[in-house]
Amino acid sequence: MQEQTNCYDVIVIGGGASGLVCALELARSGKKVALLEKEITFGRKILVSGNGECNFTNRQVSPEKYYGDKDFVASALDRFNVQNCLDYFSALGLLYKEEKDRFFTYTSKASSLAACLTCALKEAGAELFLQTEVSKITQSSPKTFKVYSKKGQMFYAKNIVLACGSPAYPQVGGTQAGYILAKSFGHTINSVSPALCSINLQEKNALSRLSGIKIFALASLKENGKIIAQEAGEVLFNNQGVSGNNIFSISRNAKKGQVLELNLFSQFSKEEFSAFIDERAQKYPKRKLKDFFAGILADTVANLMIDFLGFKKNLLICDLSSQNFARIKEVLQAWTFKVEGLRPFEQACAAKGGVDTKEVQKGTFCSLKNQNLYLTGELLDIDGRCGGFNLHFAWASGFCAAKALLAKK
Ligand SMILES: Cc1cc2nc3c(=O)[nH]c(=O)nc-3n(C[C@H](O)[C@H](O)[C@H](O)COP(=O)(O)OP(=O)(O)OC[C@H]3O[C@@H](n4cnc5c(N)ncnc54)[C@H](O)[C@@H]3O)c2cc1C
Image (cartoon, rainbow, N blue to C red; front, side):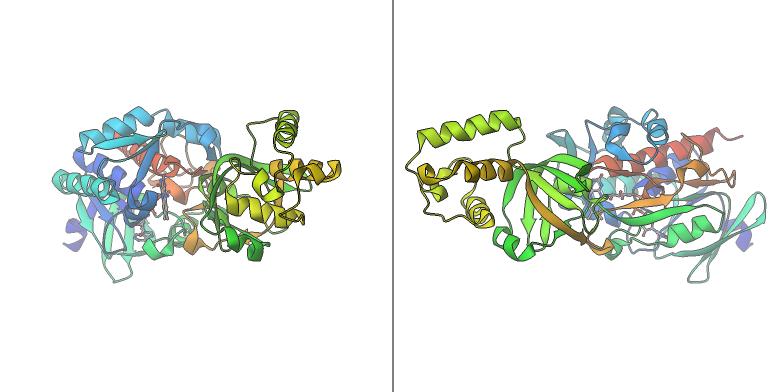
């Protein structure tokens, strides 16, 4: 009897971004679906995303915005692109707004988007289980999975979707549990570490003076003089280092011992910038060094820069040696810091690594280890840049897995 009531066509494990979309698509096509979520609400990461405003996709979504197998990403984006995503959420009743290519909820509340998904799920007849943490999955026959919850419940299904996410942000549900479940089916987990987080720098004492200051810069991570990752955008100083969208995007590659180089004037070539500074020096020969940067650098940044260079603030421009001028030009286009390391998973928005995508079929998200198992979202070894790309991949993967399940004979 218990087997009948607790028996489903599909059990989706994880009620986050990818699991919600997957369960919704299946339920509204008539499948008997259970969505099992360990937390007290669905989509807890959605609720904190985009500083609570939910940056749910981006006009620039393309495989190039992702790390990992780009063909694998393309197979999902081909089936669920930006317009599909906007149409999808519009059809669920969501109003949205666009800011510099990023799409947010119109209400500036992530809960608006989460509510659209959960209302639709209930209306579609999916069976929703909160505070239900899956601890183990076994197969009693090739076509029947037995799913055990930590509280001792038992569920049965013909197909399983693992949508458990990554260990990033454990405060809202991030966990390694998905990797353990995937491993139990023979999947390989590629080394996992924090991504989309602040980079800690060794010069934190000096930099604490800049805490809260934002500058525009081209940020480059360098190892033995070679650029490992590079991205332009706003850099926000904090009391341990730097954050900001571009820093978040390159953080997955940051390691102790590397150099972070900030080019504060990347819009100029080296020669153009040299000419620009020479022209200013001719125009303001009697200015003190501390005033020379007026209009091109924030006061705090200029003062720290002067200290960093070891110059006196009252030095007149006309008294600067050509060697010191060259040093100023060099530092403004290549201000270097030593990388101390990354923030822990508690402060990371995503994870680098995860289930090896070579073991998952492109476009269907079906496991190549078990034809009735599907894996979606951040659980996989795919991570996107900052700007709505990670949620987009999560929606896309959940959507594709559902379509593949529905097409199954
Ligand atoms: C602070 C923060 C801000 C972010 N902002 C953005 C943003 O603005 N734009 C963007 O694109 N991305 C953003 N992200 C990333 C984005 O939220 C994730 O990439 C996305 O949610 C991943 O979706 P998912 O379905 O793979 O996993 P999740 O959304 O994490 O869902 C996984 C779910 O599975 C549940 N679960 C795990 N194990 C079990 C188990 N054993 N049994 C039952 N349930 C289980 C978890 O509790 C969780 O609810 C942000 C992330 C964080 C942490």
